[in-house]
Image 1 (tube, rainbow, N blue to C red):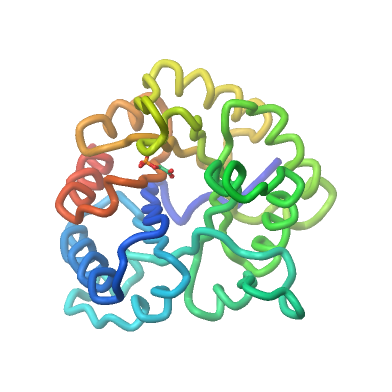
Image 2: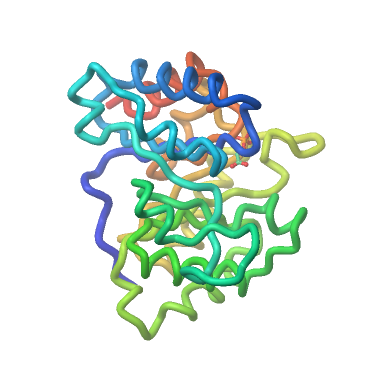
Length: 251
Ligand code: PGA
């Protein structure tokens, strides 16, 4: 299974804002503060995934820094539908997101699986649709690594889509900071899980870690072989998030 690599060997940090913040002004302030904070960091690619409603507004913020205009702070979505248009009330298609300037889309998050009944098959359809629209799917893989990956990989196996960019995230449900008794995975356990993912995905697909990451523990995950992280709670605090990116990108 081949995939074009990410642009460079940069660390990739994807911020999952989930259903936060409550107002467009707060969203704009958070986005701008992160943009400013990361403008001098070398070696990291940062993607902000806000709720759908803020996406177009965040695109239009004008930054003084030319580095940012060069694409340092990118936007992504937290979900998309598997059809491109039509009678699907409430859904948003991959091409709409692409046309809005998104480059990434988070798919298969465990909160969507447990709260909304999203199945592996639905996730696989979304992955196909996102790849077809030239979005980069950031696909969450929980503890049932082989089962989850087989459904996704089977669905793209015999198509040209398999050569497009794809990112995987090892994200055990119990490690997500809002889960009851949540605690981050140990870097040793994450390393073993990532080895299992690589067995199926090969070495060309970047694998991130997700679950209770913060500026203090991020380095251990990067050193254990992940190419970055999917960050929830810590991405809602600009100072903490910028520090996390700094520590992740540290050489
Ligand atoms: P967390 O969330 O960093 O708050 O644990 C990660 C996620 O759910 O993507």
